Image (tube, rainbow, N blue to C red; front, top):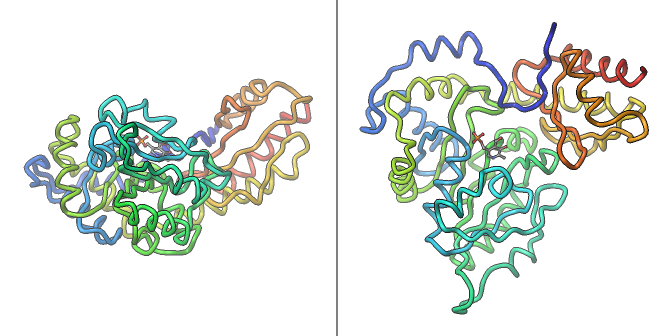
Length: 345
Ligand SMILES: Cc1ncc(COP(=O)(O)O)c(C=O)c1O
């Protein structure tokens, strides 16, 4: 049976061409900084992001953790959204490994954090308080409908950070979904940000890997911390070559993913029994709900799975569906038909 896996954009499998580029990778020992493809990918990532340097790491979680560890001395405080991935889904690593105190502020529906709340959250110089060392934003925002944060908003936050002599990090696991949604370049979007993590393994459809970008000093620190965490990899060109295969041609697939998400949202909007605010769909992530009188949330989920359509249910009762490489317009049609079929029984 056909399987349409809309659980996450992390489920993508590498294309034949990507596998060929992995086979042809030029390898060396990356802990010695001698892996040709890693060096090339890091150079390209630095250029693309407009930063001085970049570092390949195994995952987005490690990228965020290393960035926090590099920016925040132990016992200092990082401001981040209460729905952010770093706060919610990274196993509390920043406090476990960095002794970093997290100060969570409310994420609005669009992934922003109220500007005045950020200003008010920055600690004054008082021995009772930890020092604020970092603000972290997420772009696009996974739990906030995949909303992209605009340059204007990021710059406002950056001004606050600069005025207070603290750093600004962006968890850009899906930053290319943001650049495509906003029709801007990565360099422009994050011009006033100190560091960013972006993932190869999400919209870019690579099997493994993320990049951290920032200043030379920051990346030097990050490289040491990566080693300490056991993330120094040897012939990592196997990972980097997949990234090199996509990094020059990112936008095309992501645009299609966004169109498919919109098509899916509009289709869901016209199905009796499902509720969605299709106007909130800005990238490749969709949240919708079942009208409670029809069947239980789990029943709907399980019945769709029987027909090969997979997606997640959150504790809140929302379903999350994510479009990605490998999902076609025909798959969206099929999914919508399955939804209708299951709900009509
Ligand atoms: C917004 C965001 N940040 C970070 C991560 C962590 O990435 P990884 O799964 O590579 O650790 C994810 C993973 O889904 C994510 O959605």
